[in-house]
Length: 137
Ligand code: ATP
Ligand code: MG
Image (cartoon, rainbow, N blue to C red; front, side, top):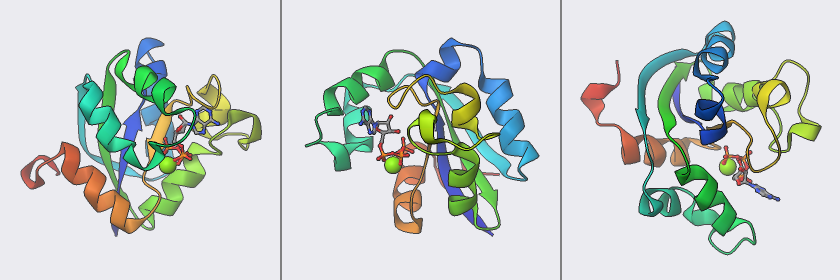
């Protein structure tokens, strides 16, 4: 059993898609073991996406991630990290497979509805940025 970190991004909360996205997550067999709705500070967003600091879209990414509330989550399941990335679909919704969250809901490559950790090491760090152990049940 594995845990991954998920964010329902501002484009999701703005369009009232929290429940619809969570339905796809739960239908896929992933369990939501922690969840809260927060507004990211600029500093939190810059830290979270620090690996992309030098990319041309970094400024826009931070703007988008702080423009409205997000829902941060911990998901649990067999191979949760890889499984959730399948459920999310490709980063660019134009390339996302049918039935994936991004194919169903994403607006464009920036406003792509969800984030999911990409490796066990990043999952641990990302979960710890937003949740303490006793909040994950
Ligand atoms: P995430 O990390 O959000 O789960 P990902 O792992 O599929 O997405 P990354 O390459 O880590 O994709 O990019 C992080 C985020 O940066 C993307 O989800 C997207 O919002 C944004 N992004 C990535 N590439 C571009 C781009 N070419 N133009 C604009 N935004 C981009
Ligand atoms: Mg990523």
